[in-house]
Image (cartoon, rainbow, N blue to C red; front, side, top):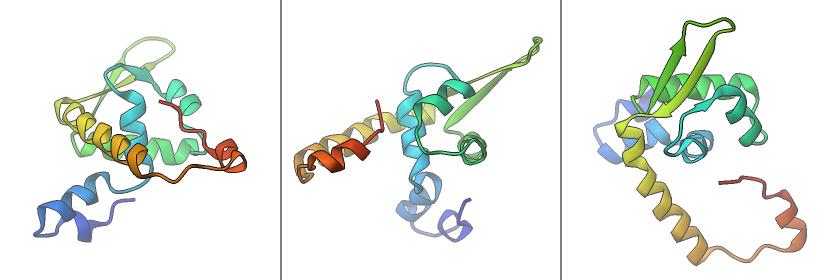
Length: 120
């Protein structure tokens, strides 16, 4: 759920965080990357997210212009998602965040490593 106080702020950084500021959106954007992907594939790749939350996040990403939803008039219906130009422009920022984390993260113990499941 969006926090409209962030999205309507006078500060550009605060508005940006309002657009991409929860834990799921950057992960979804990273998983989609430069490919076109179906809902079921996203659901299988992004761990620990409910289908309801994934649906909500995809709708918000589409509303914010980061994602394009492609619906095909077929039986059974087929829907695919891909990043828009705006979404693709966010990928280098995510890459910088990953590089920053690799540089400064504290080494995980084996028990903690078992819980890390976010795949690229």
